[in-house]
Amino acid sequence: MAKNETAAPLRVDLYIRVSGQEQAIKGLSLEAQQEDLEEYARERGWVISDVYIDAAKTARKRLGKRTNFLRMLEDVKQDKVDLILFTRLDRWFRSVADYYKVMEVLEAHGCGWKTTQEQYDTSTAGGRLYINLRLSIAQNEADLDGERIAVVFDSKINHGTVVSGSCPFWLRVNDQKRFEVIPEKAAILQDAFNHFEATISQRATVKYIRETYGVNWCDATFRRMLRDKLAIGVYDKNGRYNENFCEAVISPAQFERVQKLLGNNAKST
Image (cartoon, rainbow, N blue to C red; front, side, top):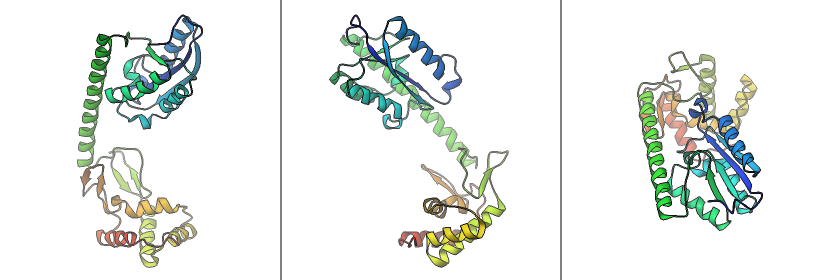
């Protein structure tokens, strides 16, 4: 898998990935992986060129979402590394298709890969079949995890429970993990909707809110609020829908009028 390991010294990149849930699991934390990889490389006299860490990145993420993995591939393309070292195959991939895409890059630049806790052999048909099987199993596990998470999210939305920690300007999360209205901020949002509908100007409304209430919104933030269906109490994201998700602070009629104004390319100045 690697270039001639008797030739000294190999330039090695260490790759570490852990999801948020895995961070607390013994042996899977960032620190545990890095310690294992550094010791493995040191015992063999390899030179560690760099360490790439994708923290809180699940195996279900597309490669484009794993920023440091892509940075590491740039090392490979610039012939700066001879070997990529990681603890287990599932730290690197859980997708057969992604694996072969990256292998094209590695093979084109004479770069190998190695795991510290598992044994693989890419030089034989049987070895390559074994890798395919392991990746297929890992991909299936990731897909099942995704399905379980989707079921949990569906249930949360159906019961009006918040699925993330982010809150719109006028809402907060209560002890029951549900959105509740912040009255004084809801009043500001209502005034903003009224002002926008009267002036048909996002920038003028943002300026009015800043001067009247001391609240600084950028144009993009305000536009998102104008389009956020949570203002009428509706959750409608990622294919999930609940028309009574939280308390409405804008009437459906006014919200619809504002959407039409936005659709007519309302002026920004």
